[in-house]
Image (cartoon, rainbow, N blue to C red; front, top):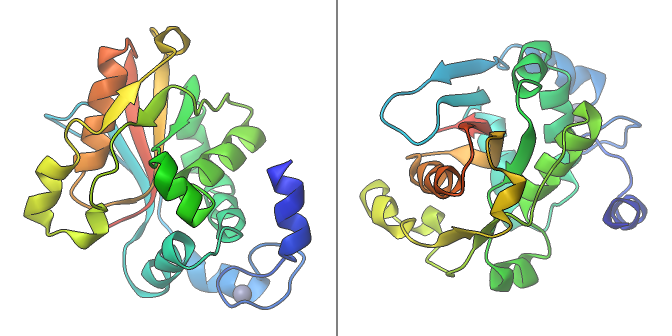
Length: 213
Ligand SMILES: [Zn+2]
């Protein structure tokens, strides 16, 4: 339903250059992005998740577009970002190893203000194309804390603690979960969400983001 509404409101444009295009990424931008796209799949230590996967460094046009996606009423950019992820074979191979996709949630008050959760739109599209279930009613944001983007790296660490909780835990017991967020900065959010998912019974967790700072 939301997909249909979004399609009517926003015609298909290339998310990078803004030109109308039947795809979400025009041929010229595709070529340009190819040089900076790399499927990074990193095994991590001392975290509540096992792998971190991302495609871009958080700078240049990618940083500009993620900020736009997040803060400037640009929900349609989920199409471009999910298309880039889905077209990357290595990344798809990795994602398909997981049983369930869960987006990093935003608080309901924030959802009301923004009108969408950027991580959820991304997760939903990836789930649809790769035929993996997406579950948004497991991990929820119970407290409306200060947005991480407004804090220093040091402050972010504590800010994420205790703000997420899980419901419907039976849906993830013994499942391999891929947690989707837009950007990875200090990893505090990803780690805290993963901690909650683990406590709820998830077997293994990987974190997928568009970019890493
Ligand atoms: Zn373009």
